[in-house]
Length: 252
Image 1: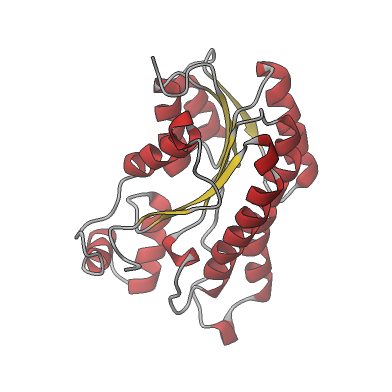
Image 2: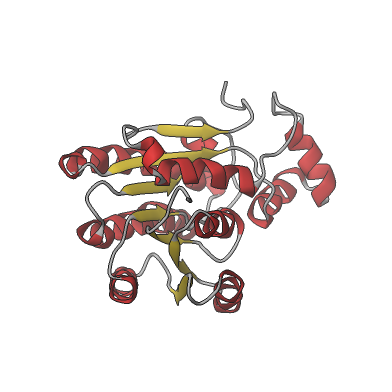
């Protein structure tokens, strides 16, 4: 038996990286998934890979509340239930000093991370089964700070506050709400951040970040997916309002 047998999970940012790795693992553990994402070709490819009997996809910008609402209803209508909300969509924003940071990019970064998670909660919670799980992908920088990433860091800290409020609001339904806090993870998303920050090619940039990590290497998307599986499954029935770090010791 799988850890998610008979469960249905909605995953934003589900067409790549941590979202897709988690979708693969959730399906392998018995779940059916509804993937939301912006990249329609990659979304279709992900659904084809997982199997149309196990997955559906919706092309959605999480900053668009009406689109998120419609997608939640589409998935609920298709599967007839919803047990896991995994708010995982994200962007890096600009890499710049605050005094030079483009205001429009700052606000867009907060809109994707905080606004997107809010939309998923607002419209997903009424459909979520009692005893279900909400997971919000934050970041190790949601628990600490670095220069030149003010938009991303502010957004990731904001998700923690949203999680803590939601966890208290839905505790009477035995719904758990937690944030995941990956450190540097081997994804195209992280590669772009590291290359921009260091000005180096991918391998050299990754090596520079590895030197910051006590455990000496990037985490993989599959390792983050294992943490998401724990939070999605009944194994975490008494875990809520928690910041779950998978960061190779960076914040310590």
